[in-house]
Image 1 (cartoon, one colour):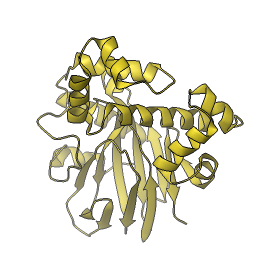
Image 2 (image 1 turned 30 degrees about the vertical axis):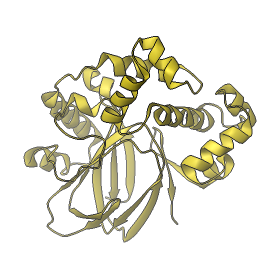
Image 3 (image 1 turned 45 degrees about the vertical axis):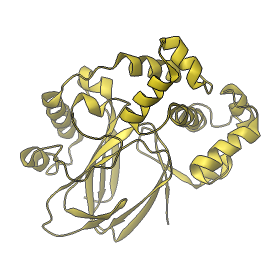
Image 4 (image 1 turned 180 degrees about the horizontal axis):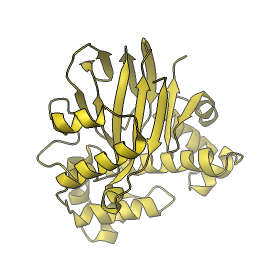
Length: 270
């Protein structure tokens, strides 16, 4: 198979509640791929066919190596990734609190390299097909078999408030609307997501502006985008993009590559 990158959605309604999308990334002739990933509120499990992890963000193909499974938590900073040698990986992109529906007793605020999220039999089937329909059905089924139903009413309400608004909310206002203390809300966010309520909200707002500019209105000016999402002005929006991407909004968009049909938008080193 030649180089391919395909995104595809779960089909089972229960899985769709917690998984945003899957993707297949295959580079049979790769020698060195360098990818820059940017802050996002999603989390992922990546399954590599025959790779070893040299350090965070660096994986290397090794003939006859066992499959590598990596959990990546919410990213609040730039994540540089290097893929050395052949690549064949499948990635599950979870919505906030999504991964907790299938696995428990793990620290989901850190990278995890030493846990078998899928059995050898499951991985063997996943990595021995490029058929998207087969992959979708298998991933849906395996996750369905692991479903545990994690509930946290406070976090669910806080997430709903943050995603439904188009501005940066104060932690105090979110806590007051849920009728809990600011301290309790902050503690829950740090435990579940590894970042503060404010930082999570900033990432959501950043991603909303990116979604609007890339997929809904490519001609919209950054000034209008700033006011639509209640930034003080374009200078405030520029500062946010500089903080999250080390680029101005315009430069960030121009350098990026949109892969698949979902929101995967990376800077790829040529």
